[in-house]
Length: 293
Image (tube, rainbow, N blue to C red):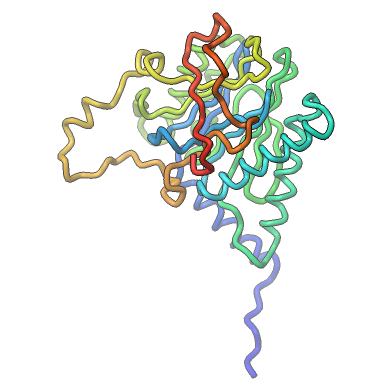
């Protein structure tokens, strides 16, 4: 009778961590930046239907990189967790810290289990407060560790290079457009040479504390983005028809890269009527209720 192959626990955990990191690194980075009126999320994402950034609850947002099917499951679970807690107790009892702790337990259990592969995901959970001091940003990694971020953070892809650029240029008094330009420039500094990221390749959303609506999440889309960053149409037109686009969003294992609005009322991002805040100069885009974004 043959002896079973032995792998030490240390080597097993190292192999699982290397596996997860390689999967996450194949994607494009996601950036969160704190500005004077809230929190800004920016991701490079060519898909208009499969989102990396989504609403979770009134003041909570979710962003992720990695395998789409895995972080979409986490997003849906987060929506259900928040809805259940808000319904059972009070809407004010739904907090970013509580949701981050729930995600940490789930990811930690999956990572340490020998029965299934680790999740190839990293996620942000963010909560906007009534003041800048009340804003919370949590970064969760594949093994369930939680980091409390301040001011700015990046994950996925070349996160270290993007974070270094943010560290050099970030300041506390950024307005929305300034924070948006900083985030997009940081995404373009993810390689040896800076590159231009155009508006039609971006997914952008904010948690805006100035909105009178209880739900603070809104997407920035359309002419506002293309006026700031242009489009890649001219470059695309010059490329031969038989050459596929070179700027693929990883999440190729995740087929389009990001979660959409969800299957419960708390996860829809559209308002019942037109924008009710004169400060909302950008269109609110409702999320598709499909769990596939």
